[in-house]
Length: 258
Length: 209
Image 1 (cartoon, chains in turn green, red):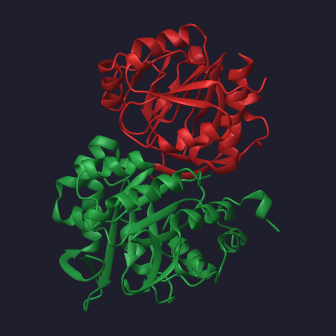
Image 2: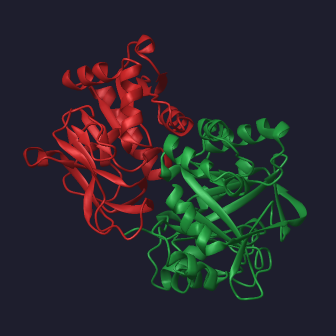
Image 3: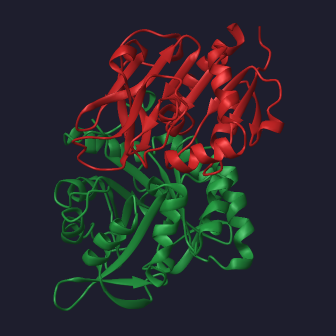
């Protein structure tokens, strides 16, 4: 049976891991490759790097980090942030990533998802959706790190992105991100019910109960978090053991089980 | 013997070769990345990796003059490991865009049926159907990493190639072996410690060949 994945996310700016609340007030939290290796040994099922500076002139720094990480952590790596073309996606994959996540660029250029999936296969294309709840209780897609509203309904966009070739969706609640108030399970449920690709829950995790809720109540396949792991509030193995104890199918790394 | 076998990793252009290169290097092989017939020099084993669609991958293999050398290598019973799409390409034909594939193992590549989610993405249990040195030190039912929507289905006449199966809505062939030919649907280079162990076992088999 397919396991639910626990995925630490490393927000990377200028070659360092950073974390802020709601994409702001960033603090330096370490070297990406070093943290990635530690997480892999702790039982992370995958890794996600989000390059949140993504300035074109600093692209080389990111590719170097991807290469160093792929050589140290033998688990899958998804890289997002600033990829706007098939050629840029190729460069990231050739550097050692397994998947690329598309966000703002996919909203701006509908052909991008289709072109990337056609070239590299849909399994390599993750579409990241940052969503904010509206006054009417629906969710709107926001881009540019949550700063810019698009007018797109997040659930409709999710379905459309899958139709265009997305092989996975990374769904972040901007309202919850960095708050520790738990995932937005209603948002996750609304999207998971409409698509057949795996949905990764993101934004708001504080502890194992939140991960369990994202899967049980939100219908997510995988869960992603950043600060609770970086700051050592919870270890990955601790979270996974709690999820397994709740009856979820989880990959436990034998040498880490107490 | 503790020499480092030379393993040719076939590059058909689509994806990440860093992981397989580093994983093989870590377990004691020297890697040669082969992108065209001209660079196909003497080697001890061949790995056909890959993700993506069968049609474009076969087109690239043919355009670079690699399809026939791979067939000849398999026919000579030299060590060959297909990974993910590389396993699927071993069969006759793929339902994914109708591509004619290498035809080394009788059978076809079909879309996964009854899958609750597609692509089948994540860690899943590999049930060993018979013992084989490629699984030395890896427990039956170990979790390995998959990412794919299609699976190879051996013909009725070739069921003896099945080495392991995995379930995602329905059981499918997750590893196959016939003599020195091996194929795995999961990604050993992305499957942590057990994945590295499997590649180390492959390198040991190459040394013994």
